[in-house]
Image (tube, rainbow, N blue to C red; front, side, top):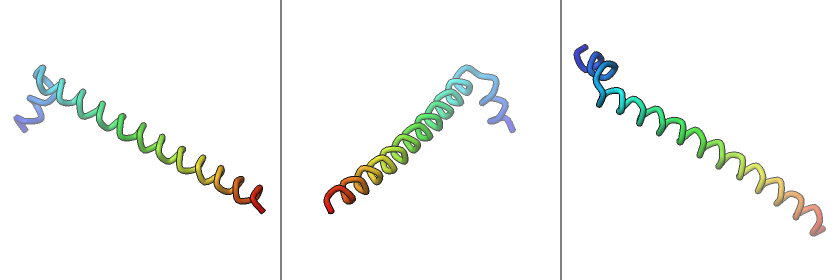
Length: 53
């Protein structure tokens, strides 16, 4: 319980929360970016496949 109190009240605890939040947001952004690039590449491949035949 003392660890949670330190996490939410001390400067270093709040800084840690900020870093954890930033890393989670960055992971979500990169995951979304990668998924979007995969879908775009799949679309391009299907268009190339259709135009090649």
